[in-house]
Image (cartoon, rainbow, N blue to C red; front, side):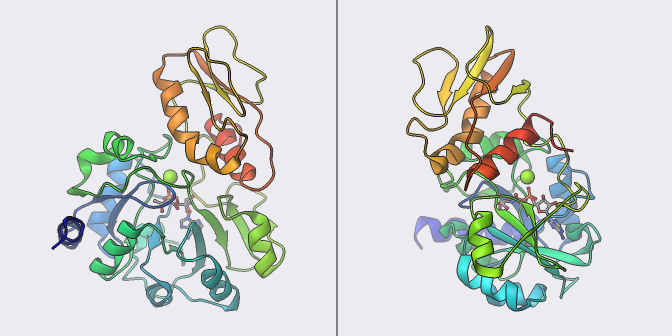
Length: 309
Ligand code: TXA
Ligand code: MG
């Protein structure tokens, strides 16, 4: 057995026993558990300190596994064909309330499904043979971990096994689209609004936070230090996250020296964590253009700053 295969087998066995696994995906690291095992799912909520009304995403190996737990309409089929495996989560009517237990869905009659693209997450899902919940591996309200070390620091102590998949390529959580009635963008992500609208037509806005992903609390993804957005530069005592070339100065990081939004997304949570650790009184962040991936980056920044109601 190659070393990865042995690790995957060990992790799959841990999941079967109701244990938790630190799981790399192309977006962020997750804390995985058997979606059908309510005790295991309860352990995930406890490890994250997450309010139990916030439902989890059921991760699947492929569309066939997804169709067993959710009812796919034509729009869902088209989106899955175009964007899976990858960073897109679909909220659909639930088809199997046992494979994804009530607690995982927070009692809703819908289920969020996603087929991740990372080879290790795909291998684990295939070996396990059923859906896994995998919320981001941070403790509730903290920035999502995008490196193995950050994931271990956040919730590694609660895991029976951990897979090191290196740094996450995308660095922001998946785009969440609900297809229950009119298609709605619940959480912007690296599959952009324009890419989705090109496939299924206009997306409505989730106009209240309750209509958004139910767990999207106003203050989320937050470091300990307060954030100051749209900043031209740092004030005394502040750390600074620049966008574009940055001066060589203490407590300053550039999200992307070349103003590349994909690079900025991949660096966002790592740099927020570094700035937080620097002991700064606050973290000032340069303006980020709102087009394409910028919508998702600005969404996470506004939430981290506690602005979104
Ligand atoms: O990229 C990702 O999606 C990562 C990786 C690990 O796959 N996972 C992740 O999971 O971000 P989590 O639990 O941190 O975020 C799940 C989001 C929440 O905003 C939740 O409210 C929403 O999906 N959600 C889950 N089930 C839902 C449902 N039935 N209806 C509406 N929103 C739902
Ligand atoms: Mg999360």
